[in-house]
Length: 147
Image (cartoon, rainbow, N blue to C red):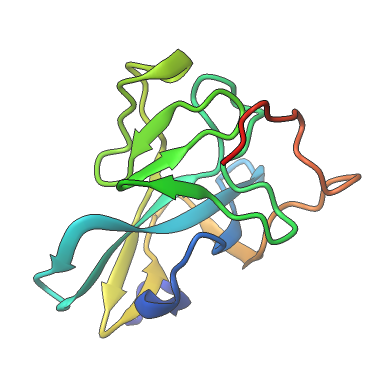
């Protein structure tokens, strides 16, 4: 595929695939990949893979993926905010519970071609695998949830 940046293979997408992008302003943001419960992508006969910006809509400084090998918590086709437990559907990005009810995650365009996941969002540039370099590598808040 010539019009996207290769990220990984669809088979290798798990709870810990995190990468950094930049937008037109140069601001860097984290994005995570997730396989959804939508079954198989009919065009590729592989798993459906979606990409989401790594923050909870209820509290934008709260990441889903916390870095240092602590990936996104998934349950029943949903991403779980580690701070308040709001659950976001991985197929639509929508949340219908907790403090983030009525809000949706921000999707990033990716395409799976021949089992390979590519960043195809025209508004974003791939910077590197992994997250932003924090001062201390820890999330900006702590969780009261045990998952």
